[in-house]
Structure formats: structure tokens, C-alpha cells
Length: 252
Image (cartoon, rainbow, N blue to C red):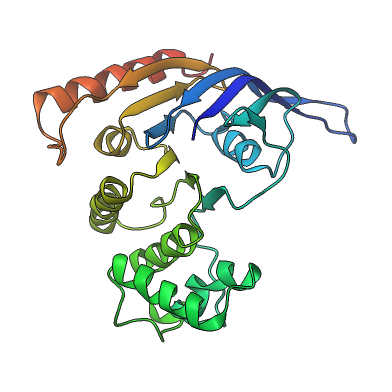
């Protein structure tokens, strides 16, 4: 399952003051089946906009996004999106949140419940299936959100700063959890983050975007074995290279 962005550009048109905002400019990117790619860049550089176009929620102003050579025009089950803010239904239990997508597909109740239990166990919450979101920690909520996305078996998983709202210790734990799931399942993941350390820890490849309008500044392959040591010289070298490119572009 190959995802390709071809000359992708996006300009937001303001009909009130007629001041247009160019968010993305000529993005070209190829993501192969099973690849983990992170996208980093300064705030406002169009990272989230790029994900929304890939997910089919936004239309590109120019260029296109392709999934297996077919243009993505609308949201669909082949692409799943995990948000930073969890987006769980507060009136539904963990089990009911996880099985929600299968309900929309009219999956028989017995089948979807069995599958939901499987995914709840996979994310380490098998004793919390009857809890409500208000009874969960931030890390637990994000695990539920990931399970709810993966249960639909998307071909591509998009993650928009999914660990940005939790504390540092929980964030590190969630990173290790995500890598474990990805290595077992082989999902194709595009992961947006402001955190360069996080990108190096998780990714096979890192795409660095410039300040707005977002253009591809640099692509870095991360050829480090898992599990990764954040203090190793190779890890620090890659992190420094990316930070230097981002800082040199700051304000341009």
C-alpha cells in the first residue's frame, strides 16, 4: 500500500479580508507499505493540513495525494487518523468507544465485541473495558484512541501529535508502546510531531518541513536498531542534524 504526495500545495482563501494564507507548497513524498515516517517542522508550517488532505478532510489547492495510484478525494476506512485530543465519546465506555467504527460498518454485535476485546487487550487495557474516559489517565485515553483506529484495519495510520498532551514519562511510555505495536503489525504510519527526539526514537525516516508555507527541507533516514538508545552518539547526531536544519530555517 503506497502513499504518494505529488506537488501538493494548499492555500487558504480568506473571503473577508482577501488575505490568503499559503500553508503548503510543492510537497512531494513517497511512503512505502509498512514504513514509519515522521513529519517535523515549526508551528504553522502545514503539518496538520497535510494530514487532513491525506485523510480526505481537506482538498489540495494544487497537486494530489494518491493511495495505490488512486487519488484520495474523501475520507474512507483505508486511512485512519489519531488526534492529539483523544476525541473519545465521554458517554461511552472503553469497549463501546473501541467498537464504534465497527458499529458504523454494521458489523454484527458479537463479532465487533470480540474484536474490540482483542484490541483492548493489545493496548494493555483489558481490565478497563467498562470504564468511562473520565476514569482514565491521559495515556490510557490515547491507548483507547489508537485501538479505536486500528480496529478498523486502515492501510495507513495518520497520527497528529498524539502524545503532545501527556507528561514526559507517559509520553516515553506511549512511544515504546507504539513502536511495539507497529513492529508486530507492520502498519504504515505517518506521525506528526514538534518533538525531534520523539521523531528520531520512532521513525525509519523523518521529513522536515520549512516555515510556512511548508516545503520539504530535508529527509533523513534513521538506520538505528530497535529498541533505540536516546543517549547514543548516533541518536544524538541525527537529532542534532535535524535541529540545525530547522533552526537555520527559523523565521525564513
